[in-house]
Image (cartoon, rainbow, N blue to C red):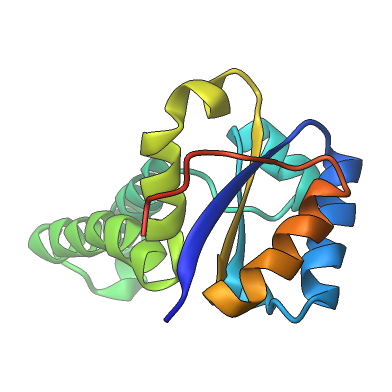
Length: 149
């Protein structure tokens, strides 16, 4: 069984080095997550999805375009349905993709994240954790109170 550990890292270069160190210890990318303000996440991944409001706006635009483009043959009611589907998908698709980890950690360490802190979340077995912990600390990562299983 894996346990979740959260580390605070002071800069993007140190984060990249810490992630490489965790991988070299046997941690897979599926067991690593980065939690930071959206502007910081965009520096790591320019294609990072916007927060949940992005999905809601996409649904609204899809519904409006369906009404304004008559060749689609969608009624006003159909456009409303498209809007509702887009709105709902903005909420549950990220959860299916694993963003619930991000949300749990973001809620728990909100002050740190809003202050510009970068958090590295590592899910690992207790047997592997000692090695990963030593490697991460060697790259400047500071463990947070991680009892967030």
